[in-house]
Length: 117
Image (cartoon, rainbow, N blue to C red; front, side, top):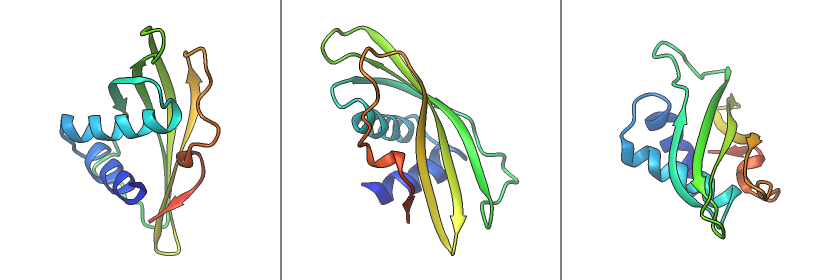
């Protein structure tokens, strides 16, 4: 799933995506950081159309909205999506910045560390 997440996230969500692709990505992010939450929606900044990742990095702000798995209350998690191109490989990670849930984001979520494709 890691490879699919990176490819879909960068090329579909950040450049031009469909609602189905966005929801798939948002669901995977939530599943990793808040496994018991119920996904509602995701929003994220877009990469400018003239931007090239080759030998560069970029940070994009995003937000996942969800309902608590136990309470059903609405919450959100804001994050920074870090992407860099190193040694001909795309690397990415997600850094939670604000979380309104009573339980913190999963510290063992694989999306916290650099993942390469």
